[in-house]
Image (cartoon, rainbow, N blue to C red; front, side):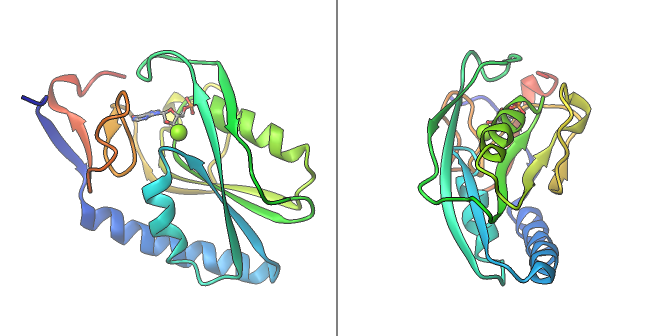
Length: 180
Ligand code: IMP
Ligand code: MG
């Protein structure tokens, strides 16, 4: 039997929030009037990204990067590695990084450092879940979906040891609600 889980964000809540995010992001970039590269950070953001970009009324290209971090996902980790690079040049272009969760901030900090070296015009960050209270480095999420103070969540792209990514809603393990 699977571990009992409770829903943290329902499919309806997620869909509503993404619709609002789409409107906000579209309005922000429409003012710039220049094309955008929307970057999905694999694997966790893949479901969120596909819903988000379909709600953007903008001239945009999409691309993917993959970061891998070592160690147990529920532990603090500092080692981040870039395992799949972009295929699009971002030099002189506006970049919207789409993440699943910004937690300690180490992954996004590493990724933005690598991408800034390529001289984009701007980099903004959109994350479905912003765990602000757990931040260890100075990373700001421009477009947060949900703020979450604590708890380890799965579903809607998010995994625990590669499981649960396919769930339509975001859940937490009932017995492990205070995991983090
Ligand atoms: P950070 O470097 O600590 O910000 O790590 C962020 C990454 O850790 C996210 O992109 C997720 O892949 C993973 N992560 C952090 N919290 C959770 C969670 O509650 N559920 C699933 N993955 C998580
Ligand atoms: Mg991730």
